[in-house]
Image (tube, rainbow, N blue to C red; front, side):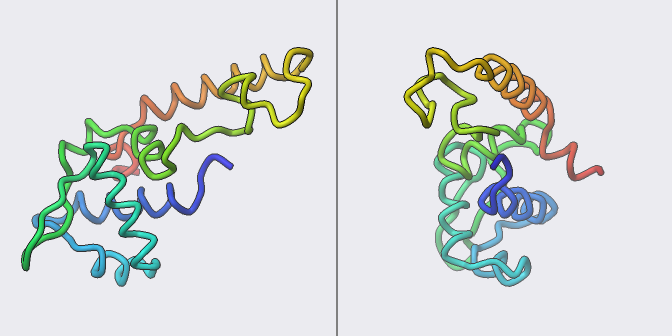
Length: 134
């Protein structure tokens, strides 16, 4: 599945963070979005490791965008949230990922790969700012 809960929560939390004038902590974000705090904290930490968010410690700590929302692509967000490149099909990224032993004779992999490339290109061209304006 391309858009998992992790990606959905990442996008929702980033929109709230982008609209804030101060860092927001995982607990207040989780409460506002009605999301599990522990699950959201893992997603936020992953996005901080990937340079999407800055993490601040202390009483006034929390998370803030590491760069402008127009410079953060949806593809980058989803990769950070998922811990891997999101794929429409298990095998879409590479014949090596084929769930069966028939990768070398698969007649639909070329189509699935072209579809995946188009989706990746679309997501690379769409930014956090773009979805905030819709």
